[in-house]
Image 1: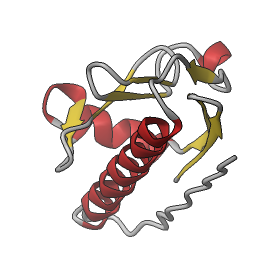
Image 2: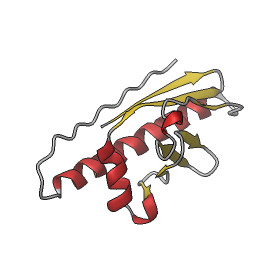
Image 3: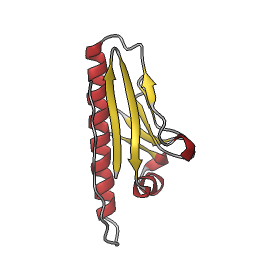
Length: 125
């Protein structure tokens, strides 16, 4: 399960992962090449020491090695316009949804039964 909030501000974005299940981290370590998942819209999903969005390199960082930063709120500012901000929000939403489908499919491909659920929380200005 992965639950996150993404909030639109004036030419800015606030992003926070509320919950990330251990299954997501396990899939990142065992089923994803080089611990990075490239999705169809060109964004890459990776784990890092804390959640973040790198707009320039099109990378979404999930929770990772530093649990003290798990609830960190990443802020992206100085975006050129609100329409560009909205485009980034839509791209991030799409990338995370595709990644979660990949995670769900990976869970079902294991020999053990699982109760993996996908929950996305989107909060927009």
